[in-house]
Length: 611
Image (tube, rainbow, N blue to C red; front, side):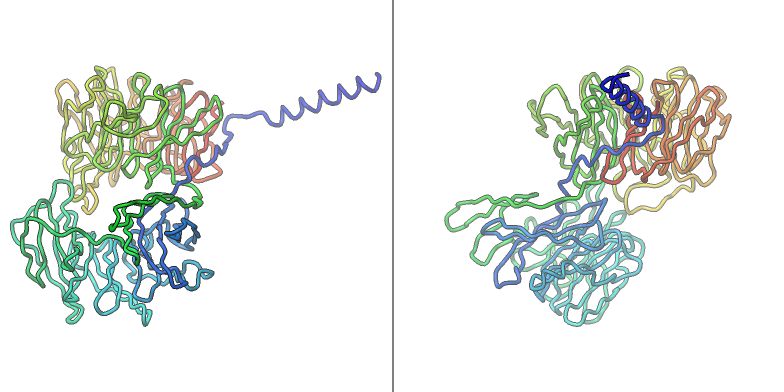
């Protein structure tokens, strides 16, 4: 064998060896990158820059990481970013009397502080003012120089004294409610707190006496789906309270009903210019003297936005939604390419469903239904004919978080939801994609419970589903256990419900296959017979089932996700045939494209090969 031929053979064998090593097998997990990196903008305030001038401060959340603060020069747009050591996000945000920037986090209820004079110290953790509270919603500055913040989940008021560093838990502002959602200090130095969501209340706290009491006039009603009082300081220096359609000026401890109120104070720089608008990476300044505006941009770096759900859409592409901000992305497996499509005004898409080459997306809050047409090669959210996606408004009464969306009989789409804040009893809406409107809506299908999973079983003609024993935010369960139920679309009523699993809180995933219905509770898969209406078999899963993450693959197998594994079920034998442990936490699902299942792990998109 001559030397040239010998080299060719060696190279060919080596190449074949490499091919054998790199061949992708079933159960192989692949990271597909981070689809969206824009961050969630929580707010903007004016504060000192630490050098005698002013700066704009932009507060960004990152649910899958840590929040960050961007200090921006209003004259040039020059930006400096500071990453927090703790906390995924902060609602509360204020410039303190000590010329430092304060943030109050969710998922920890921490006070964070940034000193513009000492930028190298970055953002530091001051502490946790209450051991029971996980959210600090808002700050306001008291006449005593303290910062006051309202909280969740025990509707408390807390304080922080920047002079001494003392933090104090001032106790519950309402005996049963969970949300003290807004706070404002009046010209008298008293602190007013807006309470919700099940029973709205207006509370005043007097720092001098350390006592609080309700000021709510009898007979007032809140807005449907948001029974919460909102308090705010206005341009005349007074605090006003809003509750439903009622507006009140707070004269010391006397609420006075009024028809209108002054505007809220503008964000005004020392030179008189007003921050008239702001968004991620952009803001506009208005000079009131001349009426002229100038727009400036700034740069920042997000680590990645948390993926809330993924689903399969037109052209065998994977679509997904991030949470706070709601950004929609698409991954094309054939091209191995991810594309950030654009945003919508909600918090996150809870469910999506392909219909005749278009993608329906239903988001929180209010279960707003939208339709995206990938054939129109642009993203322009709105309600006009040229919008894409086009928004059709809410699904109906009882819908806030639209967790389940399925194809039902007669070409209709069925949407199951959790109810609004402060309410019990979710709903099933019937959406007609030909008219693009809700044609039927059924509240309290399961009394006092949410709808969390649905499946259409064509042999029986019934819609089967699972409830969650919880209600909207700020409520406590009225029922001990979640129920499995059947709804008859022809009779337009529930025809069956039962407690399949004592103590169950919800049925996170349900699917119908060959005359059987498979549903889940915790780490159990139940096989349900629609004819006898009983569970015929229980299969143990490799962990707790993930929401909306169980479906029938083209191979004939059921594929499901737990928080740490992908599992395959043979529906004929009614047993698990494969389990593959994931190298990362599985946070959400769920899409089949060809021979892979796609899921989200924090800000990353992943897939697991099925063949």
